[in-house]
Amino acid sequence: HTARVDPPALTLLRAEQVPPYGGDTTWANLATAYAGLSEPVRRFADGLRAEHRLGVGYLARSGPDPYLRHLQDHQVASVHPVVRVHPETGERILYVNPYYVENIVDVTRAESRLLLEMFVEQITRPEYTVRFRWEPGSVALWDNRATVHLAPNDTAHLDFPRIMHRVMVTGEPPVGVDGRPSTSLVGAPLHEPHERHERHEPHEPHEPREDTEG
Image (cartoon, rainbow, N blue to C red):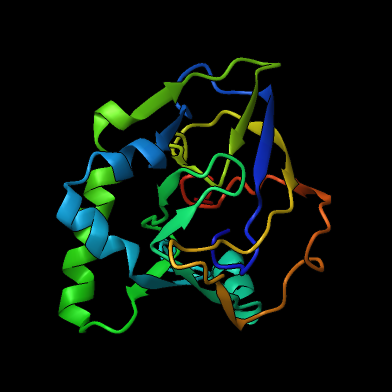
C-alpha cells in the first residue's frame, strides 16, 4: 500500500483457517537494512525519491483478471523518499519494495533499474528477515513504516482454504531526511493529516504475496 501518499502505519493480521503447509509470512527490517549499507551509499540514498504505483509488482493471470481490472480502474501513485525518517523512533528506513516502486525519480531508467535491484537485494538479505508460520488463531502486528512483508506464493496450487482477517491503522505521509514529505501523483489521502483511523479490509487471497507496505 505504499502507492498511497499516507500508507498504513500498522497492520494486524489474524489467521482463521490456514493450509497444513505453505503460506508463511516473511518480514524484513528496513531500518537494519539501511544501517547495513555503506556510508557513501547511505548518503546517496538519503537524497533520492521514488515513484510508488499500484500494481507494479502484480503478476497478471492468464485470461480475465478481475483484480487487474480493479487496479487499472483505481490507480494510485505517490512519490516517497527512498529513505524515510520514522516519526516515532527517528530511525532512517530504506523505504523501497519490489511490489509498488515504479522507478527512482530524476535518474535514467537504466540507473533506476540498477539502484532498485541493489536496494531490493539489500532489504531481502536473510539476516534482515524473519519468517512466521501461521496456525489457526495466530495474530501478527507489524509496523509498516519500518518493515516490508511478503508471503511466498506457494499455496495457489493447493486445494486448501486460507482465511485471514486484516486491520490496518492509517499512517501519515513519509518524511525524508531533508524534511520534505511525500507527494501524491494520483489519488487522495485516506484521511486528513493528524487523524488516525483503523481500516478493516478483507484479505484478498489472489493478491500477490499478500502485499507490501513498507
